[in-house]
Length: 470
Image (spheres, rainbow, N blue to C red):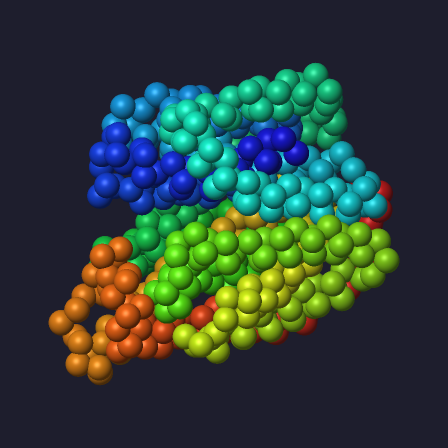
């Protein structure tokens, strides 16, 4: 739990420190790569850590991930240039890619069905609380010490978590028989290359280079499919996807991640530029969603002891779809309370459906595939979020440009309109404000479409009897 909290905090704490980092190290033009390097590294390695833990055991792989994460954190704190920081953030992400999924995988190993239902809700709550605390902790450390402590703060909790795992947990013997199987180096290489190409392409989707990278990722995934069909012990077992419950859970992860993480990325922009609110107010608008996510995770996990998981999943996706629909009909007259209510519905949807799918998958897959299945499930939500942010950003750019042209303001660039120098002008100029607000409506419609398709898909979730033997 401590390691999950640490990795979750790290995803948000750095954002608060970035102005101080840029003022000392420079490199404003490479600002976004501090986040992108971490995301690409952690996302790419998530499914690989799951497979490695299935073969070599949870403890050894977890400790290796922790060491990489801590070394990366210390080096980030020692960075003397923006290029160094970006490189060390990638190293830190390589470790974080294991800490997050392995925390949930270990739950599947350690606890019975009843205990797992309670622990999944608790762990989801830890993630939510960490997401709220992260920005506050970052601000405190920067104000009271300096930005380097945003990275140093990981060291003591990481050492404590690693020591506890080393001394207090003994690995089950279920992994020993698999160590002598050949390692699927080809599959691991193709999976890594495909994911990196996809993420890099999504980050620059509006350029020809971005589209080429997405095309290359499609070719690499097709090659991966061919390789995995013949592999003795594939890094991504295709047999998992022939299971209807697992396949639907992956589709749910992609579409729910698209709807929720895509919306969250653009709500602060809408609040600032359409409603004319401050950055602080815009950031606080997201808090109710996270709190409702935490609350629903805890309640929903306990409801699994009394209700069929399919019922909880359907209720969650219905709430998510309703919230995203209400977001799709926003206007400049919408109140902050209304936006918070809509986001809370989306948070409830994620809080109910994610633990239900996680527990259902961990209770039905073979033990030797538990790590791979759990990590792939988390991986699907990350990829879905990246897809949502990229496509919704493209929609915003295109629709805003079209609206400005129709309003006779085509001489203004989209980049200028979203810059800090024009934020006040956007709120004051009705034509510009209406153009932006009209474009944002289409952005949230894309999130609603993803949620609605997700709801239609989960209707076909099978009612499998969940085993209580582990």
